[in-house]
Structures are given as structure tokens and as C-alpha cells.
Length: 424
Image (cartoon, rainbow, N blue to C red; front, side):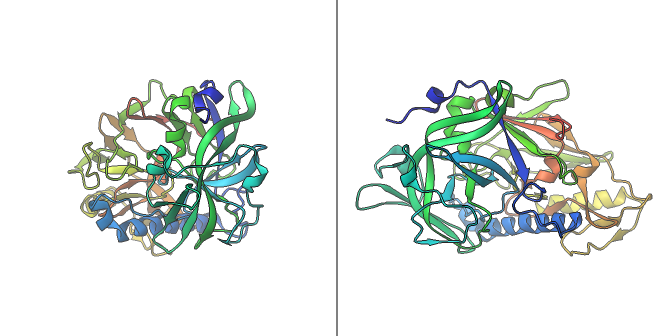
């Protein structure tokens, strides 16, 4: 029997660094791109991500989990697998569940710059039995001839990852209050991919899921972190500062300016974290958000919070009213988005002034900063960082920037605290 995480870790709380994929410290960084080009690319990636959800909207309504587009996470983290630890830089995605990496032997793998993990080099690698509870909790698994569990993850763009479900020691570099070091969790379940192909980037080694399902990193660490994690995302313009992902006692968010809202789960779509958005105030005009267009489970919720999606996307009828009110509140004349992606844009002259905006979640009013509502998409052109989508409403990472966002899965609450994330 594998050790529990609580045996391996005393639960005092720890933090790890998150590097934005467009940071100079990221292997995905392209120094030849301008800041506005990077933003345009990030917006396009987030729309591609939503398009994959949209294509599978029937699956959402029928209770099936739609595929997540690979390599669309916006943040990277350093992790290690095995004994001795084998270092990896993997993509973090709050919209994914099972963590997987490329492993030797690779029968059909995409090109990867970094060395592949070799299970034979680790003394703690153990394949999972197909009769085990962990294997049974996963979708799309099968049994090998030796009775071990085999997984298959397929994506809407024909990408896939196929391999063995295994238990290993997961380690993370930590900047905890007790000092920097390596915190390890034995018996962590992950996918050791031997057949991986599609639209994966050669600089990426795999995906780390932070979603709400039972096999995600967060759920597997649940006991040792007391169901608590938080992050503080620096605004897009601040690429020299890294963000922090905190666990356990270090993830508790409190303070006089903090606000909390219920965190909901969808029994038919367990990977996502749902919130209820009741209204949006623009200037002095309050716009009501009706109904629950996304959650079909027993719990309420009409919008998911996702750190991997750039824009905030709302039902088209809500977005239309919002855009109209924003336009009425701005004296300057609209201009076209040079990229043709966003629909309400302005020249960022002295005449332009973004209206105040407050998101009214259940029991929590969140006043946004200007950088949460408008982004510079080209030199001298700023656009409203919101869009329309009728299949899935998403609270994206531009709107989350500048807030310490704390998840407490035990209390089922999400807490926001206005914070200078570059100093957090």
C-alpha cells in the first residue's frame, strides 16, 4: 500500500512559482514578438480553447466531459517525478484533470527538447492495477495483458495521449515560510504516456491538471493541503514578475478587503469550478445576469473560473447589454481591433477613460481595475477584454489579475483579495 500524502508532508503550507508562458523565463518565450502580439496570441489560444468546448456542447448537455485542448494552459511550473527526482517544466491547467508526461519507451511521441522520463530509472515507479479504485475512477481506461491500467486521453483536434496509469513520487520546489526546499508526495497517480501525438509543443513535457475532478493534482493532494490552494496572477503587462501557486495553510486568503463566494461543482462535468454571477455594474448601471446557463448538476453556478482562459466570456445576451452600456459610458469613438478578434476597441488617447466595473458574484462584489477590463491589443489600441459564448461562460485570467484568489474546497468557497501580485 502506498504511503498517503499526509504521511509524507506535515501540511504546514508551501508555495511554488508559476511562470507565464510569455515570460522571458519561459521556454515558450519568443523575444521577437511584441507585447501586444503576445497578448493577441494569448487571446487567440483562449478562443481556440473555447471553440473546442463549443464543438462539444452536446456532450456537456448530455453530461459527458468535453475534451480539453492541449498546450493551452497559460502558466508553467517546475515539478519532479520519481526517485531520484527527475525535473520537468509542465503546463498548468485548471481545466484539466489527470497529469500526464511523455515517458520511455515512446512508441509514437511528439518531438520533445528535454529528456524523456524513464520509469526504469526510478525506484518508486509502480503501474496501477486495472482493478484499483484509481483506475476505476478514470474515463477511457483498459486493461493490459498483465492486469495493469492503461489510459487514453483524446482531444477534439485529434491530439492524444495513451499510456500506463502509474503511482510515483511527485516533488515540487517550494518557497515555504520554513525555507526553500523540495516537498515530496509518494503514491501520486499520473499518466506515463508512451503514445502522444498532435498539436503539442516540443518545449512542453506534459500537462498538470488543477481541476476539480478526483485525479487532478489538487484532489490528490487534498488531505495534505486541507483542500486549500491559491494563486495571484500578475497583470499581463508585468512579465518580469512571476506568479505564485500556494497550497495548504499558506493558501488561506483573508483580510478586511477580501470577499468570498460559494464554489460549486457540477456532477456531470466535475473538472470545472463553478461560480454564480448575479449581475455586472458598469458605472452606475447594474445589469442582471439571469439563470444558470452552464451548470446542469445539483449545485447552482452559471460561470466557471479558469486561469487558462485569457478573456472573460459571457452568454451573448448578457455580453450584448454589457458592451452597449460600456460604449455608452465612453465618450471616445470606437475603432476596429487590428486583429479582428475583439468587438469594442478605442484609441488609448487622453480622451479614453474606462468606466468602473463591478462583478457581482453571490455574496461577493468584485470591483475590477482598468487592466482587468481593457487590454492593449496593438500600439495605441485598447479593447474590452470580454466576449460572447453561449455554451460555456468563463471568468478568465485577465479579470483575475491583481487579485489573490483562494480556493477552499472544504468550505466550498472562493475568496478574492485585491493584491499587488508582483510583491505577493
